[in-house]
Image (cartoon, rainbow, N blue to C red; front, side, top):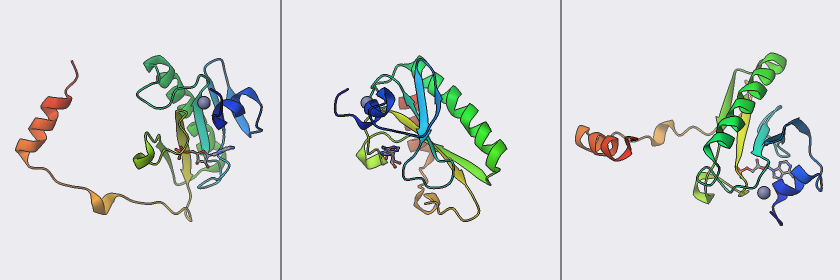
Length: 136
Ligand code: AMP
Ligand code: ZN
């Protein structure tokens, strides 16, 4: 897609620190990392988000995520690794080309915790949501 910075990176029009590429997936270091090893895994074709990307491509992106996470763990031995994928501005998505973040968490890494903002729904509401979201 024209005007998409990640498409330009995949085409080599903008430089990146690539760590993996195959026919469907591309991965490079985030230019503004949370921590050492923060990596982005992208579909090579342009899809905006989780709703647009075909299931098999999303699954393959996640296979690559697993391999890169293993590699980070082996090389850097962080205390943990946070994996997230933002969809929509309110969910923190800035670039509308589907990508998964792999963020190593070290002793000094600052992370935002949602813990104190979690809710508790009563049984009736939980059952209603369960009914609405149960897959066929
Ligand atoms: P998101 O907010 O989930 O859309 O994530 C977009 C990510 O892309 C951010 O973490 C940025 O730091 C990163 N980013 C933006 N431009 C570049 C670039 N040219 N090379 C590598 N990463 C980038
Ligand atoms: Zn794109």
